[in-house]
Image (cartoon, rainbow, N blue to C red; front, side):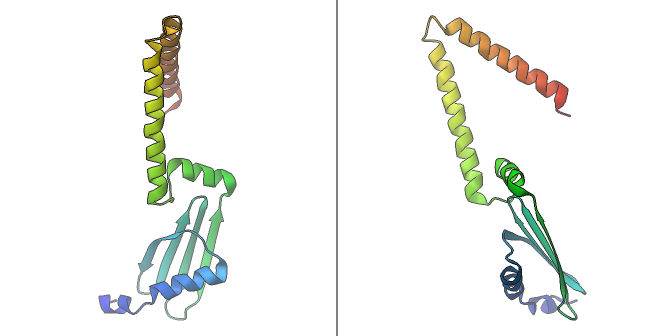
Length: 138
């Protein structure tokens, strides 16, 4: 198959046809072309779809996987197949949580009555987190 042959394939039209016929959601994550077929993969939070198009006769086979609300929440939590904007939301949220935690820890040093208890809770939380990590994370 020459590079000129792959340029003849109407990628956008194929993707839009699949979207309109099967209500496919998610972004195109892969579009592979070989001598006999085209493989198109769509991905989104809690969703994947793969289409295999026969180049000779235009027939295709479509497989979809929908993982439900827990799959969507899991993918959103991990930032998997969510796009650049959601990754920024995750990063900004993490920075804000760090700032809130640090300011709370800093405030402990100015509250004389709660200082020792707060420091002990912080130390216990750190030790517990390390313990859980050591035992249950492979």
